[in-house]
Amino acid sequence: MKKKLMLILLLLVLFFVSACGSNKEQKQEKPITVYLWSIELLREYAPYVQSQLPDLDIHFVVGNNDLNYYKFLNEKGSLPDIITCRRFSLHDAVELKEQLVDLKNTEEAATIFTGYLENYKYPDGTICWLPLCGEAELFVANKDLFIKHGIPLPHSYKSFKEACARFKALGIKPFVSDWHYDYTPLAILQGLNIHELTSREGQLWRSQYENTGEQKAVGLDKKVWPLAFQRMESFIRDAYVEPQDDNYLYEDMDALLITGKAAMSRMTANVALDHIRRYGMNLVMLPYFGQDGGEDWLLTYPAFQVALNKSSAQNEQRKQKMMRILSVMMSEGAQRKLGSRNDVISYSRNTELKISPLLENISPFIESNRIYVRLASTDFFAGSKLAVSKMVKREATAEQAYRIMDEYLRKPKQREELKLKPFDKAYSFTDSKQGGNEAKSAMANSLRSYYGSDILVAVGHSFTGPIFNSGYSEKMLGYMVMPNYLESFTKQLTGAELERLLKLYVEGVPNVDVYSAVNPVNYHSLPITSGMEYVVKQGRRHDAFTLKQLLYHGKPLDKNKTYRVTVLDKKTFFTVLAEKLDGQKGSEGFTTGEKRVSEAWQEYVTSGKPLLAPSPYLTVE
Image 1 (spheres, rainbow, N blue to C red):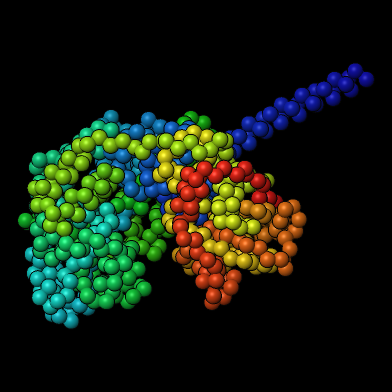
Image 2: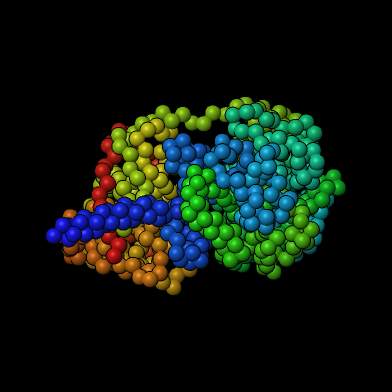
C-alpha cells in the first residue's frame, strides 16, 4: 500500500514538474512580433515571409512609420522583437541604439554594398539597422507631349532647362510637383545636389549630422549646403515653378500631368509605373541632372530599414528565430515580392532584381552605382519644407533659405510631452486563440460605443500595441490606431449578411488582386469583433481558416434579425469586400465616418469617456 502511495506521489510530482516545464515552454513559444511600417507589406511580403517559416509563430503588426513611436514603446518596456521603418535616419534612431542588436557581423549585413552600409554605421562601428532594397526617386517626362511639339527629351540639365523654356512658350507647364508635402522639397533639394552630397565634404557633414542625436544641435555646413540652395534657386527659376505651386497637392499635380497640361514631374518609380499601367501614359524616366558639370544621379530610399530588439535576443532560442526571420525578410525572394509590381533596386550584392523595360533608360545609373540614399530625418523633412517653401513662394533667396534651415536644425527639438493619462488599466497585446486580444478588444468595444453600433468588425491589424496606464501624448494616442487611413463604414445588416461579410474577412477573398485586398496571414490577422463572438477552424496552413459560428450575447446570431454594424478597414480594401457582399452598390451602401478612426479614437479618449473592458471575441479550433 505504501509503495502504491509513493508511486502515486512520484507521478504527481513528475506531472507538476512537467506542467511547470510546459508553462515555461509556452512562455518561450510567445510569437515573434514584427512591426511593419505600412499595411502594404501585408499584401504579398508578410505572407511570403510566413510561408518560408511555417514552424514559426509570427505576429505581423502594422505599426507606424515614425521612430518616435518605437521610442515611446521602448520607454514603456514594450519594444517589438523586430522593427521596420521607412522614414529613417540614424539621427532619429540614436536613442534606440543601446536597445538594438548590433548586426555588423551578420551574414545579412555582409551582403549589403559597403557604400550603402556606411550610412548606417555609428562611429564605434555598430550597425543596428539594415536597409532593404531601394525605390528610385526621379523626374518623369511625358514623351508623347515632347514628340507632339518636337522638343527633344532632356539628357542634361542644360537640355532640361531648354525644354522647360519651350514648353513655357507654348503655354504648357514645364514642371509640376506636389510641393505641399514635405517629401517633395526634401527629395528635390537633395536630388539636385547628390554630386556634392557624395563628395568627401558632403560625406563628412552627413556622418557628423547622422551620428548626433535629436537633442543636440547640428546645422548645415558652410561649403556643401550654400551651393545646394543656390542650385535649388536656379531650378525653381529654370523649371518655371510658380509661387502658387507651393499649395499643389498630389491630386493637383496628377491632374495636370495626366491631361497633358504639364510636361514633366517628380515621382517615385512605382508611381510612374502605376501611371503607365493605369492611364496608358508614355512616361520616360529621367535622373536628377547635375548642374555646373556635376554627374547625373538617382535618388533612392529603402523600402524600409529593419532592426532587432536586443532584450528579446538575450534568449538564445528566441534570437535564433529572430535571425531566421531577418534572413527571410532580406532574402531575394522577399525583395522580389516588394518589387513584383514596382521595380526596386537592390542594395545587396547577392540579390539580382531585374528591372522592367520601362526603366531600362535608368539602368546605366544603377550599373555605375550612381545611386544615393536620401537623408530622411524628421528634422530634415521639416527643415526642407520650411526653407524651400519660402523659396517657391519667392519669400526667401537661396542665402536666406539656407539660414532658415540651418537655424531650424540647430534648434534642439523636444518630443511631444506625454501629458495625457487616459487609461486606468493596462491591457496586453498578446493574441490568444481562446478569447482574442485584450488591448484590441478594449479599443474595439470603446469604438463600438463611439459609433453607437450593435456590432463592430475591425480588420485584425487595426490597432498597434498594448494599452498602458501611464502617460500618452495626443500623437501617441492617435498612433494606437493603424496608419494608412483606417476608416469606418456603418450600415444596417441582417445576420445573414453579417455572416457573409465576416466569412470574407476570415476566409479571405479568392481570385482577387492582392493590391485590392488583404487576406489573413495567420491567426493574428483574424478580424476583431465587438458585440459579437465567432468561432473558426484553422486548416493545416497558417492562412487557412473556415468560419464555423457567430454568437450574439452567447447565442447563435439570428440571421433574420437586423443589426447596426460598423466596419473598420482601409477604404480601397473594404470596397472590394463590400462589392462581394452587396454587388454593384458595394461600399456606397454604407455610411462612411466623417473622421478617420485614429481621429475618432482621439476624440473618444480626450472627451473623458472611459475605456471599456475587453471581452472574449474569438475561438480558433
